[in-house]
Image 1 (tube, rainbow, N blue to C red):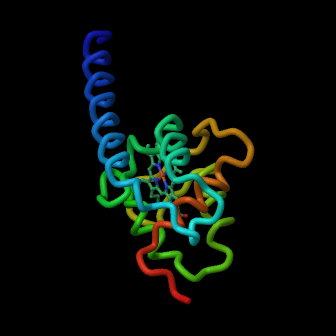
Image 2 (cartoon, protein in one colour):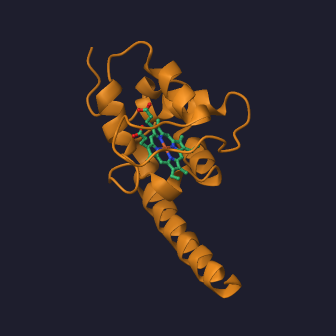
Length: 128
Ligand code: HEC
């Protein structure tokens, strides 16, 4: 079984590298004032090191909803950052489909909140 796990980890790793490369290529213009003080590149790195990108992608639905879909769904809701931060730290189920998001993703204090605000900043044209 060890061998199998190794192969899976390798596949995951190259997936991550692809995501990283794509994100890097697109990150030139992504730091808009709407995303607040968050550094887009640093946030992407955090999301990768916290394994968020194993299940999520920015533009595509994988196991989990894409960050853009999440941002769209919660756009204009003042309580959204808190609600998403809670989902990120405590897990979530039944909101998007049958697959739950596990709790206990090993985040440092404040990280769930930054990640929530980073994701919310991905909504297409923000309403004025
Ligand atoms: C094991 C797979 C997995 C991992 C790892 C994961 N997620 Fe999720 N995530 C999901 C699934 C599945 C859902 C949909 C849950 C539901 O239907 O309520 C979800 C939902 C969400 C939502 C929407 C929650 C809501 O209240 O609508 C956010 C935001 C989110 N994830 C962010 C993150 C972040 C940030 C990380 C990394 C710290 C992360 N996810 C790691 C699978 C994952």
